[in-house]
Image (cartoon, rainbow, N blue to C red; front, side, top):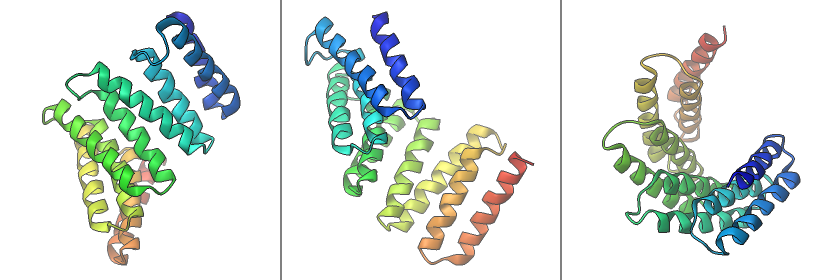
Length: 212
């Protein structure tokens, strides 16, 4: 219903303004209305959306346990709504949950989320390269770096960069520069200073071209 959408939109406005307590109040109200309309525990898309928004807000508030609970509940709803087990909504929720796990240094759990999300995106894309795949590879690369699995991180960044180059048709992008910068950091952490300098230089030159 429109009222739930409007309330959720107001929550998003306050989230973007970093007024998290006010955003939380609107998201809670949206969840209450959904319970009144559909029943508590109903597997309906508006409930999952409200939970995702609330989860993002809790993560910004550093209430990671609350965020995880929201993502887990939203994921259960999306799985019920997708009998085949694969949907963009499931993959996006797994990505969000992965970021939340990484924030609290639960890297193994984060890796499981990213791996499942990536498998879903690859299956849904039917062999095509997509922004969602590149974004998930980036997240997984950051997570591998935190786990000091530098070779795995480099593989993720390299594949993500190749996808970004393909999608941009050779044009420079901020996302590509960020990937190069992260790849440089990964090489530095792994002790390969020469490759690190090379990637940092490439990233810096791209940033300069983007903002002359």
